[in-house]
Length: 142
Length: 125
Image 1 (cartoon, rainbow over the protein chains, first blue to last red):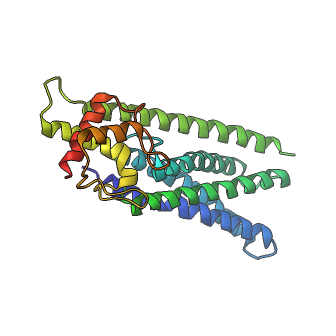
Image 2: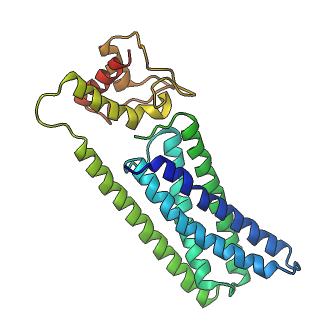
Image 3: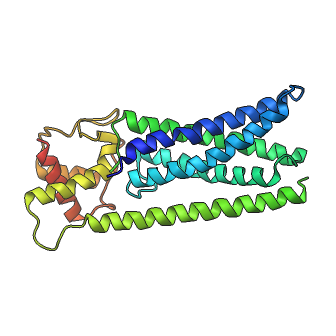
């Protein structure tokens, strides 16, 4: 029997932390362009985002197994899912876009990317918050 | 404006994301159906223990979010242990809910489902 609750709890922190880290790296590298390592920060943010997207697959699979396939639910469980699914879709999309485009971004493309990255970071933080609420309020998982 | 490479990347991103989300929801649906089929009772009449066991699975699906996994109450919902109300009253609350406090489960669960949930709640007394 796989302990899905423990597995989900362990994996799920990677996409949350890495996405927030990637967002921070991108914003620092753009606001402080003259930093000697600004370019490296952009590279770090790219890899962090790619790993976050990969880790999110593990988090989603373990989450589905844990909830016995209940993709929505009620209460904190429902709110967790309302934020998780858009965050997951956006995270995967942003990672793919970034891997395709790499450094060849236009000013407009980069602006749109950063806005969506900020949105994804907010969504995943909210999903994490409600995931924590689920844990603290005694579960609610089948 | 966006460069052709960025547009190509955006198309790839939208397609990949959509495919992964559809695959996730399809897999989740299949898993859910399989789980529900496996937890369906046999055709033979259910003993009180089996009734309560089935009610327990409904409890975890719909009640534990608020009332706590051990049914001992959550942040916004009271404990369901040692309920001093009749079985019929329990069934009524499950079906009708409580205004501004608890949703109605009349649409989600049929009479048999309510009966088994009631059987499980009685085991908590």
